[in-house]
Length: 111
Image: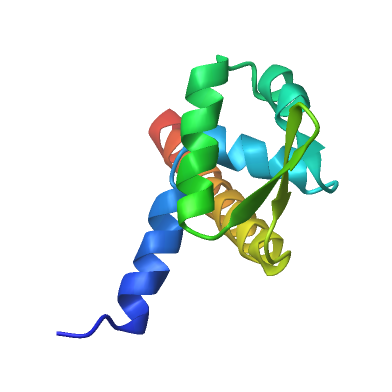
């Protein structure tokens, strides 16, 4: 059976489905960055950050380049940030609805 587009979409979404990987992408939003700057930004251990970068690389979300002794990472296609922005907006909308519902329930309980 040949892979379908949903399988590729699931692979990308799966690669994004971790807070540390989202934080790494947040750092890379500004442009290419040395892994030595990513580690303190995400407040992670070198081995753990490397593991998450490898997952993003396997999903073709980021690519790496050796520059002397340093390894630099960059996002392959900036359209990924549009997706992340939409997800953030969706989360904000969901939280807003939940807050309204809780507020309504609290008002009704107080009566």
